[in-house]
Image (spheres, rainbow, N blue to C red):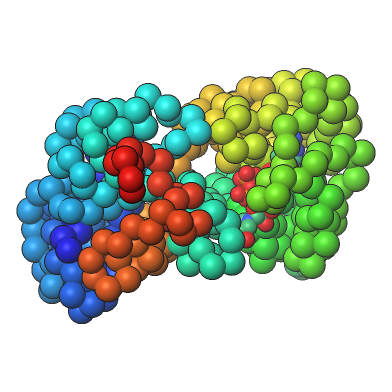
Length: 362
Ligand code: NAD
């Protein structure tokens, strides 16, 4: 089986779907790997490292299996072979046209976002691996901008109070943000609409902010969308508490839906000058009313960071983790080194977003 890896073409995408370390393992297990020249450059892996790992350089879109990070462009879809298997972040809930194009092309597509979040599939969970990197980086972006030291310092010139950080949304990214902010010395509070996370937040040494807003938790562990009344209640409660914080990291998301608007402009205006908001939900519209996706805006002395694709800013480790997720999925789809797609299997059928219609009698 041949696995190909193209160079990512999306603006600002520095990650690569397979790193040399993982390629070496795949080659040893009998797979052939073709990597487009320059594919690993953004993640600091030169072509020579891939060749040393046993890959060859060539067309990254021509394999029986193509491993990507970002959704393919129309041009890339046109270059995929009919019947080939595509693995990547494909945005199945928010980009139905892209999925339709893959279907028309006759591609068997597996979306990393659709891998069921069950224990058996944990090693393939790229949403989690990339959210971990994003949560970490969000805190570093905040620390870099806030004109304060994170830790409490006792110096000859007197004591400096620690930064007070608020992390809204305590899923995978939020929990990593809490842990990172704590390691830097901040006093951290967190809020989530799923009451179940209170214990996790507290076990990381942060305090859980009671805002009196709760949402149902779906079977998959996700939050449901708030009603407009609940959302208004949350905004009012946050507006009251937000001026206490120097740094706010927001990660609130509901799969397939625009990010919930949690922080109105009026709340930003109540924060102390020099405070920073990092909006990890910028890509899906942002949790803050003044967020501009892809930009950093100053709003009355408050920096609102809407930088998107934070994992790409940590391309080395983000790619390493992502590659291991891809390799785990490959191992699942081709346990003996050849594709064996078992549609009865929960992971295979759950992750697959387009496949050929079964023939009569199949
Ligand atoms: P996500 O990115 O979809 O959302 C981030 C967080 O935002 C969630 O915790 C959500 O509850 C919260 N949120 C939504 N609306 C909000 C609002 N209005 N205000 C405040 N917070 C709000 O979530 P995720 O990080 O992908 O994790 C979702 C769930 O999946 C979690 O329960 C996590 O533990 C679970 N999970 C399970 C596995 C596994 O079992 N293999 C792996 C990873 C994650």
